[in-house]
Image 1 (cartoon, rainbow, N blue to C red):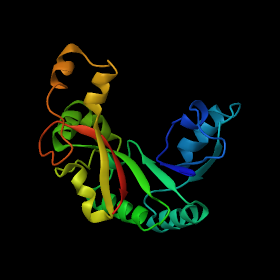
Image 2: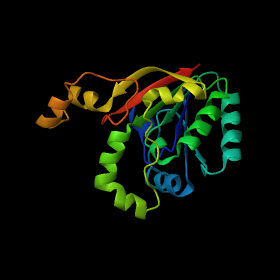
Image 3: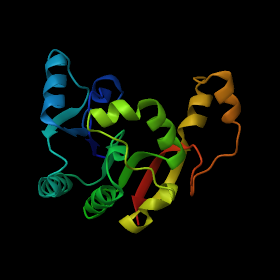
Length: 203
């Protein structure tokens, strides 16, 4: 990859702390308030690669497509990251975003995280009230699992359970370590409590 586009980058600092090639172009995309705040905090720090920040309102589909076209025309192989973004979008919005990404030839790979309806219900039970009051309810939890993207020009080529990865890193309590022993699932999730990270390629 010659370019990484981090959608809804938030306070992520990977361009400052990872061993990345100096020639890599890293683009952070998010709302003005978030990126302006982060830029102020990191004003004395130096990224290890070429870093640009783009202020974008996700509700403006035209601006989003214009940005994707521009970035796609400047690069040969682009990795899209969308961490912690999709769960706040409606399924229709996720399909629209996926199709916009698939329309750009150089956007070859996409890494995103998704949750099942079972995990969405668990999260809403503990955090739903505060999120609703903040105007940011959870919306996207496809029962199809990674297969949701099959009609959006993308196919999952690798899927990793967050629970099993946490178990491998020894970051779980005893009870959750036992749960992590259950067979892995990378397909249809239904009501199963599951969350994972998907690497997707163009169909």
